[in-house]
Length: 164
Image (cartoon, rainbow, N blue to C red):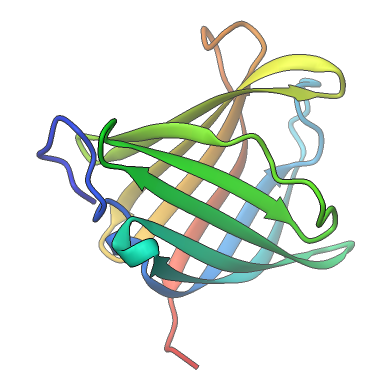
């Protein structure tokens, strides 16, 4: 993770290049005061693209109800110093999610978007941290009050695996 620049860097996600085993922890229901979490495993492989100004990862999510695939696409804008991140869910292959946009500061990547959940306007936040060397963490949270408070609803902890 790049942490010294006021603006982001195309190398911000270099820590994530490779193959990963993923431990998922996700709220069963979002924005409904739910305290029940489900846990499941997955796999992820990330590589750089766009001559280093982007990256893509291919994900296998092994939910208890059945596995599915998804793709994350990230692109870096050198003029703004910010990243845009899109999610494409294999269960809805014709719909690309609204991008979250942001950058890294002091070792934390924070990315935001305005979106909708069940007809309700929400603010979305993705955060990337590195709690231990070679063990990145991604966390998703939603806000219904413009970012005054957040409900964390999905955490992914990554551990490197050998390249197949």
